[in-house]
Image (cartoon, rainbow, N blue to C red; front, top):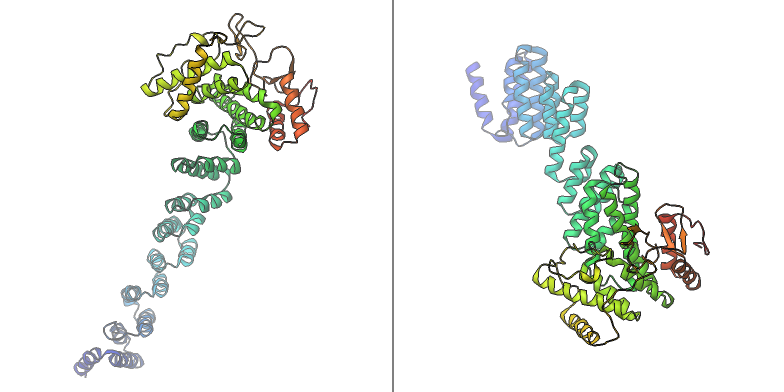
Length: 494
């Protein structure tokens, strides 16, 4: 009988689904007769070769395990292992995992849940039965999310990995939006990365907008980015016009936040703080000049600002600085000053062509605070035809006996725009309106180190009141923060 039965089983295995039905019928028959070990063997003979009904296969293997557990415990582990492997092959991962748990093979069960991407079950299984495997499940989950590119879900388990994935896909806006919910430290990191990316893409203004919107923390990792934005702005075309106000004001406000932050850290009084304070002052003067250029009554202040900015030609491209100061002086009728500055501009322009400024004649600027050691600009500020116009004007004026190649001096016997008086070594404060030295008629402010010439201050405040200029009003708003309230005003900020 046994031999006949074996032959019957072999025939059944060859007949596909009908064969599988025969195998299952035979298995149930052995089961009914109490031949549990033979029944188990029959249930395990149902395979993808004999059936394409995955549910039937799964049920057969689970039945084999059940019989082994109940009636043939010595075979329970081996039968379960076979069933689990087969269930995995037909992608019945959850059932495979449950069977592994039945023989306390927790790690294997977790691997099955993971294989089936049943992450909630994998995590719960680890938490309930093997806390030492929770880290393992987490690692596998993170790897899975990375492989599948599921950045949104990755953020929930590994913020940095999720945000980095968004960056790799170029999803910067989404990255920043997500980082906003993760606290200032994470947000600052990704704002800085995005800003650096934008600068590389020649989108400096958008980088500035980022810091304006999300804040500009005084952290050293960001310092070069802030500086780069400033240096890009001072070198850009079109940044000297009246309508450049908002861009300069935005940069000014960002740098004010940086300097205020630095003042509250161990950097107070440091060279780093001084560098950012100088850049802040440059941006404030550019913003103020743009505001003044919109009011005819403030043309003289705009000219003074252009002249004052020459002391910052270590920040501003020096050819641009001297050209703008020279043209402002020329338009204001100060021909001696214009001649000196535009002559210097032409010398610098030649130096740029040669790649060096070391042979400039500094005689005209010996007793001034205009720096000699300045970077060579990467490119000419003016196009060649404009440079020719300057050359022609300088040449024409040099023939005029009335124009002298000298800078104007004030009551100190010093160049009028210089903060330092060489004869006494006394350094005056720069006027927060004009940039010129504050000497006698001055307005002090609540914050030390801030002052204004009374004439310039009153003129600016009066023009603001008369014109209701939003730009001039914004300058006064900023000065209210930067300086504090005037201590002896003839006009208030209003």
